[in-house]
Length: 111
Image (cartoon, rainbow, N blue to C red; front, side, top):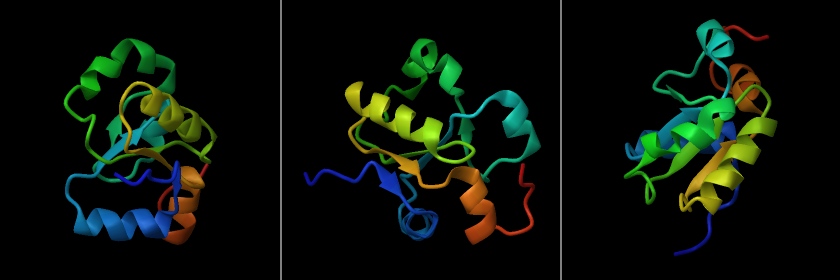
């Protein structure tokens, strides 16, 4: 299997997600941020809780997991960590939800 890049652009993610319903979208921000705005279909699993809650991702080791945060810094760390835990297809959404708001879904809340 070819190694996937650690980061994916918003456009690339949107295109691939529309073709692949196996994509799992993981929001690694905190609850307060998620309550403010989220990408439809995302599952919240805050970075601060990931180590103790990673078992919630059991069975998704072969699935494409796209992780996002506010600007892409936390999600890059989470995606790299997930790969170390056996989730070899984890990637980070470049620019996070802020880039998503600018490029894909204008009109959603930006903060």
